[in-house]
Amino acid sequence: MLRKWRINSKQLDLLWQQEGVETEFSETSATDLKPPIKVLGLAWDSEKDLIYFDPKDLLKFMSRKTESKRFILNVVGRIFDPIVILGPFVIKLKCLLQDLWTLGVDWDSELPPKLRHKWQQWSSEAEGLTEIKIPRFYLGDVDQELSSVDIHCFSDAGKSVYGTILYLRFVTCNNKIETSFICSKSRVAPLKSLTLPRLELTAALLSARLAKQVSSCLKFNANIILLD
View 1 (cartoon, rainbow, N blue to C red):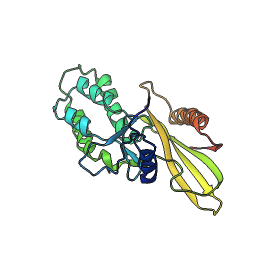
View 2: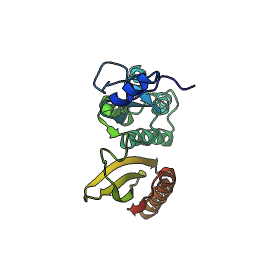
View 3: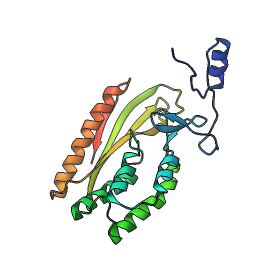
View 4: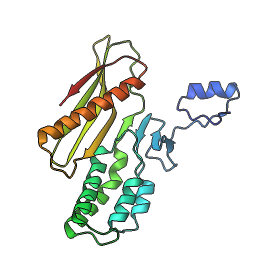
């Protein structure tokens, strides 16, 4: 039996209390001292209905100040980001790992000076991850019928990485246009040298596959627009 529902609606909480349903009503925001509410491994600001990444446990683990390939790999494994809201941040660490593999650095050896600087710079930025927040509900505060719904898929590639990001774009009957982040994916380019056009095609393929997966999960029809 499901118990202790987590909601952010005062009206629904009052109604459920009258019906004898046990709830844990919360108005805790991301800036409060109370522990954040977890939703699929991410934190939920129930007052503003925002999803964000809580780096507290990650920062505690990183406080060991260890600098080795093994430790960096452990850090990557501790970042659970199912919809990849931290893509531009995490991909830097994956590129760093690829450089360590290319140089043949041992698991517990000290990092080369140049790569140590990259790691320290990456670590210093981790505290600001709570600033990245996205609405939990794709359609925001829209309470009108929608005249059109599109999934806009942007893909791009560089010499070292390629990736895609998906947004939901919808237009109301009053011609009000809204957009919201859906998800993204990024990959480190393979060590085997590929031309930039080929990497861009790989990014476009990644974008198309992700768009197909997302559209199959939505409960409404949406046009898919691929942009490169």
